[in-house]
Image 1: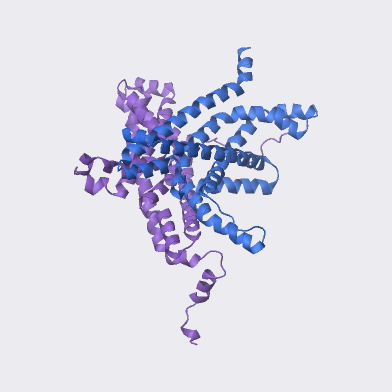
Image 2: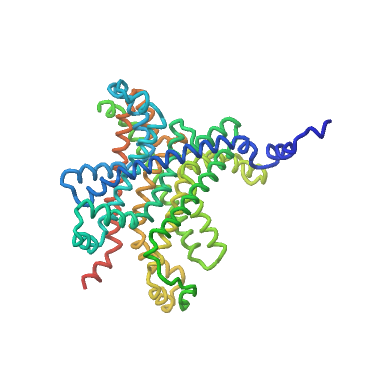
Length: 262
Length: 232
């Protein structure tokens, strides 16, 4: 028996495969795959939020100021996408579009519309844009009238007012709601794994199939998602601290709140 | 369109499963939510940290991950535990159980926040008055806390319910024959997935619109007293 040539990992590996309730070595051996999965998840989520956010700004302005032509169609769009499951929206785009010959013969078919990654991105973007439009609209409508009057008095034109006064303050007001939307989008991105993409959950499912395991892949995915969510929450806390600084009480009292008589 | 009419029985069956699943899950989530809210508001640090960990976990983990974990892992865990302790024999977690347990568990965390907020919104003086009248804790809950809590909780409950209905679509992934699963199977066999998926979207819109109507009535019922006092 050549004890010396044995790796220090052997007893750990034996423990992992035998006595340990979770075969953690199977996860560690494939850690690079999980990192790639995390990249796919983050890339899809971030791009969808970016594109959806950009799309939602003009839509929210049109909704908030009741554009005579666009308000109705935009309302239909947001109602439709907010009232239906993201899973079905993604299926509609990924599996559904192939039904139409003119789409399959179009130039966009091969590079974009037949690719799972692009379909997921399109579905996620349209979904998050619908939610963002509605709460951004709420934030724009909540603009104090005095701010608009002051901007008018200062001689700003319509678009300057929107750019300098209304939008920046509305973004601030919408920030706490937006942090929820970002987390929901991250949660929603698991749908990508159902259309063959290898995001975090996709890797977890692959791992369980490959090693014939019941929990390990999902537990690893769970931990990774939690890390991402708490990272995102942190970033938003910091942003709220920074951009909503004017709303914080000037002196933070350290004393206990007044005791309630029991 | 004709094709949808041809498969209407299948779609209807799926819709019924979706509705059943949503109702079972929402009942479970309300029970868990009440428990969680009581835990969060109690002075017992163990109950507080349990309820806190519960809501944090749910906020951190996507619903589908929990569902797959429960469906594939939970079954093995339950049976391993049963084998080891000899408490029970083979238990099968079917798709309906896994789906409703997971969705109920997830929305229980959201309901916890809903009910916590609603209980906190009840003026403290009313509870004190109840104690002063000599009401027992259960009577206090039945007569003072519950009727008002429902009113304060309804807007947030409504929101949770609408999200819950949409979440039920995920059970098709673990093979439960809900409306998405049925439409997907039918659509694939006739190669018209767009038509069928679009029909599913419309069915979901109808379900949410119908439940809005129902919840509206509930809101009117539970805010009956408020209108009178406002009018006076």
